[in-house]
Image (cartoon, rainbow, N blue to C red; front, side, top):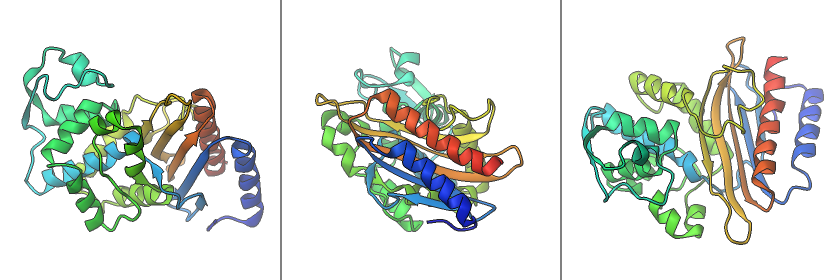
Length: 283
């Protein structure tokens, strides 16, 4: 489970994670990867769990790969109208352009999709890529394991079970974040750009960053399903690259699935797990 960490520290962290996750009616996947010190932690790390909006990171990366290859331009103008501004969904883009707009730059749509988790923006990006299969092919080509994308945001809104067929593992997520950080996913220009966008993320402040010092650099992507009529939360998620005051970095992914706990309990669990690893990396 661990590398680059002595047994005593392993035991302390394991006991802490036990105390945070035991007796919770939920499946909790956790992976942490230290970039400089070789630290590795995995719990339920190979469970395929629904991503929800975490997949917007993968989608944005596929769009920027198309930009790197000259197939798309971030300056390309996208027409917004009733055909791509779904009403009953989270969409700062729609709130900004309630009457549509004949030409919004792709750059703005991508930024709202990642940093504010815009669902309409997500499906506009997928439409530009000709669907989810393009994202799957890109990730496959990069050797990303245990990632599957089949459905759009609109399709997940129509079918609760569709979210389970857009899945990843926490091990896959932190491995991908390290690949991204190392510049092995996108060009340096696109890597720097997407990192900046992720650093500006405004959603989920009660999850991974809640207990970290204000201003801590965290390039992150959140995801959440809400609850169904039975009170089940399909997904409460976040992935991030976090930078410590000493300049060290680590990737963390916490995916909470099939939870009968309250939203507050799910998010507090993620927050407490995050603080556990922050304390390890900063002590």
